[in-house]
Length: 202
Image (tube, rainbow, N blue to C red; front, side, top):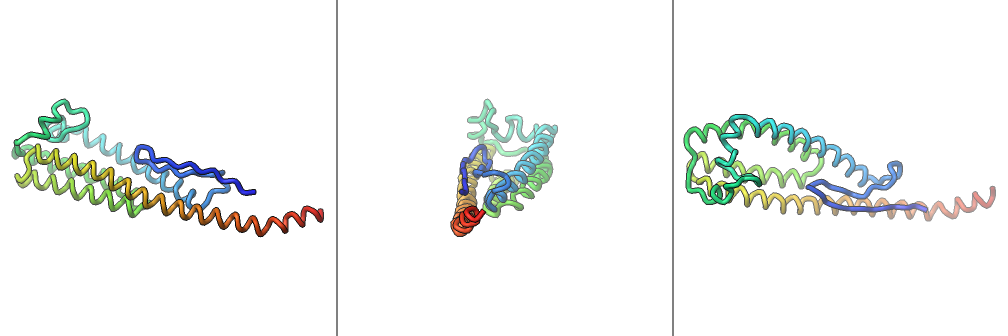
């Protein structure tokens, strides 16, 4: 008899597909395990890069509750409503930040590009929206408030886009898994009479 245990969950943007015994995994389960390994490494590396960038003196001129609101900003509402535009020194700081943060993006995208076209596309769309916000600020078209509102919207849309991307990937993996399991059951049904006959002979 073939036994298969399945468990599925999505937690903190990580994918979790049920795996059986290591020696009896389906192709979908092996693909997911490899995907998770690659993404765990990419996330860890990009987080390390992000920490280095965010703690630089230049980044403190961009964030630190001055231009962009963070989840811990005490002046979040003020920044969202600010009518101020970037000063020349802030433009310089933002340009440096963009250049520094690009290498972190590349690290993260290198992982996504290897495991999911759907999620890779969703992340590229998010980066394009953020870059458009930066450009509008540098050109004097966006106030700090405009930028924070647009940035918040882009971040929320990214969550939705990633959910949709994961749903598509999850459906593909589940279909692969179900098909392989059905093939295994069929093969077992074909072999069972033979095995029973051999057992009877012995």
